Image 1 (cartoon, one colour):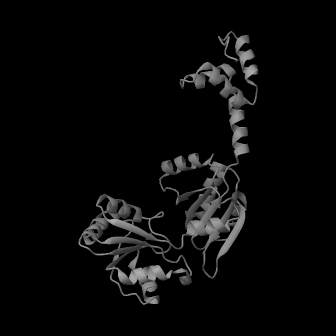
Image 2 (image 1 turned 60 degrees about the vertical axis):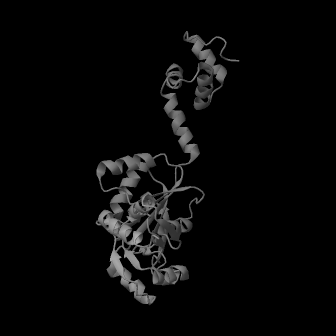
Length: 289
């Protein structure tokens, strides 16, 4: 019988957030795969856990995953932990989970702390719909593509950033998205936890004179549907009604339905679209009914 992989959430700061189930599991498994064994040994010592550890991180995630799959296939139970929080979220654990499923190995998750959710609930921004971006890509082109996608994102946006990159990232977000309400969260659950409800511009002004310290979660307000609608309406006004019709008809949409869509986009009646098309000699007879 193959063993089982346990994804064990560990505290993101306050050790009191360790769940009894995670502590029990870490004691029970045959092996713990840890992001950094030097950090994790302090956690294990605090809870008097003496299970053997092996490193599993971004730079050995493929080769070490093969080793861990071998251990699991030999019937050993393995726990995966990160330095802080829930494994496989913005973390190489996702690779191991994928390979386990491909190998027919059972995976289970023991929930607990997650910085992204903790920050979202503290942000004062909408929590009904949100998207998690983790760290923005280091590659300039890939980062630009992500920022372009976020321009019209209506959900609340959650990102991670290290202190030495914070000002640069805030500047890039401000340039790409404009000023937005934002909440910056640092040192979550720790003694010096700080929650700063502000704006992107306000945060940039603040860190011109104050050095960022600690790991940050940036929570950004999404674009409102009204703002998005106004922008789209402005875009439609820049082209003629005939060109607007052509966009829909090129997609295979019939004339009658295209007229309805054009009217809706431009905030006018279908009859106005009909009359305009007649005035420029377009063939729309019988399409208004």
